[in-house]
Image 1 (cartoon, rainbow, N blue to C red):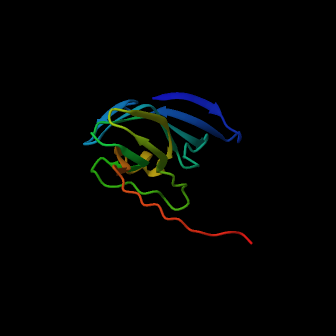
Image 2: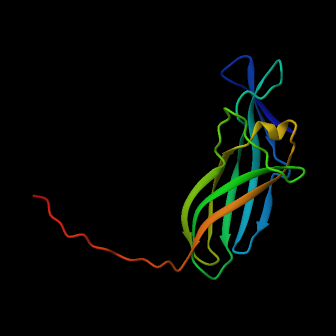
Image 3: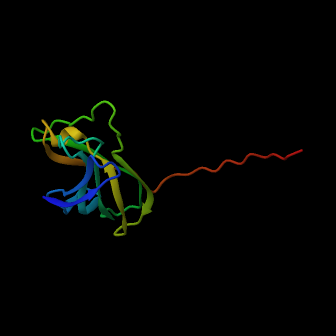
Length: 157
């Protein structure tokens, strides 16, 4: 479903925004509840050939809730794109690959953090290998962390 068309800087190209179906998802893991919403794919298309001329982007809103009894130190969120057979959809040579969002946020039990999702999606997901699902990997460090402080004695002369 085309949500909007905007004339782009090149008169032979246009920017098309499509909703990802479904545009909202609640995903439950062992330690987290991840809520994704307003998921949209943006792409720049050649008006004549209808070919995608730049790496498409996936954007949206993300809300992460800590469901564990521990403090969790979220490092990043990465996405892998799979076709209808469950096989990875690769990026083509020359495509911009940005399939991770950096978070660096410590959340306590039952605490929530929110942010924006802004990553790229392979062109091939719109061609031969139709997108079947998106695998979301939440990278985190469980706490309590053990920390050690070392002191360097020194002076400037």
